[in-house]
Image (tube, rainbow, N blue to C red; front, side, top):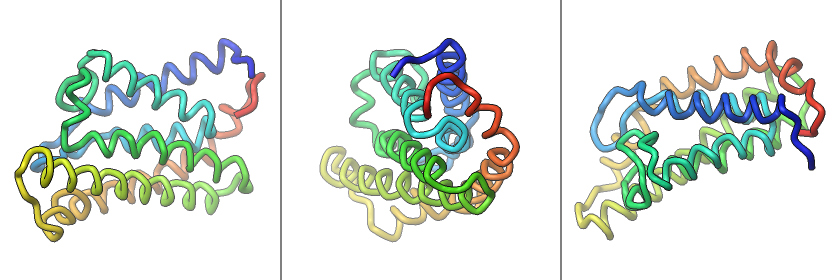
Length: 184
């Protein structure tokens, strides 16, 4: 598949938004509240699975090669940060949201379903990774109840609000972002 300049600009814009979203944060323990989920979810809804995944993938690669664009910096050592599972979840969740968006009707219901699927993937991967890193790598045991509170429950209200906002924005913006030479 060939990408046109418009696709490249859209992907680069979402990569930049995700990076900026990492710096807009509220520290609440091990996992900070950021705007990354908002922008990765929008990437899936607006760009589709291919371009959305490219946007998140470029963000991850840039962070792993050393650019300090993750919430706590960057570099290969970030693989061992307790929050790296959420970053992996962003990629898979964005891809899934893109698939649901592409296969469904362009309607609020489709975008809400895609956003909730994205939310589920991000937190499933994030929590599993957080638990494993804390308990087996950092040897700083975390109970399931503390894991669920600090790694999930504090995020639910805000991230559900982002799912709603993303769906509303997708209703208006998806027609604009799909007017591209390449398929999503």
